[in-house]
Each structure stands twice: as structure tokens, then as C-alpha cells.
Amino acid sequence: MNPRTPEPLDPFIMLIDSHAHLEMSDYDADRDAVIKRALDQGIEKIITIGIGMKECEQALALARAYPFIYAALGLHPHNAKRDSSRLFDFIKERAGNEKVVALGEMGLDFYKNWSPQQDQIRCFHEQLSLARELKLPVIIHDRDAHAETVAILKEEQARDIGGVIHCFSGDYRMASECIDMGFYISIPGTVTFKNAATLHEMVKKLPLERLLIETDAPFLTPHPFRGKRNEPAYVRYVADKIAEIKKLPLEEVARATTENAINLFRLS
Image (cartoon, rainbow, N blue to C red; front, side, top):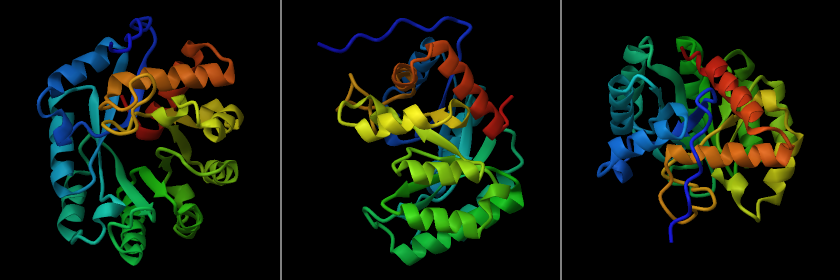
């Protein structure tokens, strides 16, 4: 039996899924239905994230097709060994489009190492420099490279750029350092897992005014849909869990995380 979908939110409550991958082929069969389910659940804005040339083109096409979808354009560390010049030219040409709200996701992934670490580091520096030039905030991917990620952000004076550490997996000290640099911390569906005690403690300590919520759909599906494809409608479960952990009304979590996303990405 499928888990029961929660009742729709009060119409005056708005949620923003700050990180999804709606352009991925996982949604080719039912993308319109997925987007409709998100709207039905009160998810009124979605940032869909490019990770390479093809995905950036598709993300921007989706953002242009739906008024409530926005795009971030970047090169994922998995793809850092590819030639980035064509993609960076594409980003420069479209950075002025009102639907392009961030550069990323970019960063380091020393867990899978699908690209050599030196290529990842080089590409990370290049994209931070590009973000500074284009005056766009950045979306940071960090997996098993916590110290290196913070060091590069400090070296590049990323405080002047601004952004978010997406799908945060570091410790409280790292979160505090990133917040001190003016960054937001984004909480994914893993916060709903029973074995996520470390993340629960971090959410309890972190200031609500520095938190975003995300699905990273189609990945990291929250309980009670764990094991199935994720989708933006499920960001509601992330907000619910944060409210439970912090002992706050859902409305307060929704308001704060929505305002945070609007401020970071300069959404209308």
C-alpha cells in the first residue's frame, strides 16, 4: 500500500523546493503530472539544477515553460573532467535571463571521484570566479570533501558571492563556518530518516533564518516514500520534520525557508 499523501497546505503557506533535477530523464514519462502534484502540495516555486551542457539547456527550457520554475546552470564535479568552455559560454550568454537565478551545482565529490580530484578543484575555482563575474549566487555540492570545500570558499572570498551548501552533510562546525561566510544550509529528505540523528541535532542548533529545504529529486526520497523516485511535492516532508525537530509550527518553517530562498535567489 502506498503511503498517504498529506493534506494540501493552507493556501496562504508557500514552500520552495530549492534544489531539484526536473530535467532528468527520470521524469520523461510524467513530468507534467509531477509538476502538478508539487503545485497541489503548495510548492509554488522550484529551482531545477543543471549539471552539464545538456542538463543546463533542458533546465532553462523548463524554466521558460513554467512561470514558477527557475534554473541554476553549472557543471557538477562528476562532470569536471569534461571540456567546460562551451558550457561556460552558454552560461555567460544566458546569465541575464530572469529565470537563471544561480550558478551550480558546483563543488567537490571525493566519494565517487568520477572526475579526478584536480579537475574538480580547478572547475570549482573557475565557476566561483564566473559567479563573481556574473553576480550570481552559487549552489555548492560537497561530499567527503568538507575541509577542501571550506578552504576553497575562503580562498575565493565566497562571502562576496553568496550561496547555499546543498544537501548538507558536514558537521556543525562546518555549517557554522559556512554561515559565517553568509551561506545558507539546505536540508534534504535524509532529515526524515530515523538513523539521521546527527543531522537532527544540527537542524536543532542551526538558525532557521539560514536554512533552505530541498528534495534533490529524483534522489534522496524522504520517509515514507524512501526507495521510490523523489519529486518536489515531497519537500513538504522536509519542512514537517524540521518543524518537529525545532518544535515550531509548520507555518513558521515554511515562511522562513521561503523567505530565505526568495532572498538568496532574488525570486519575484
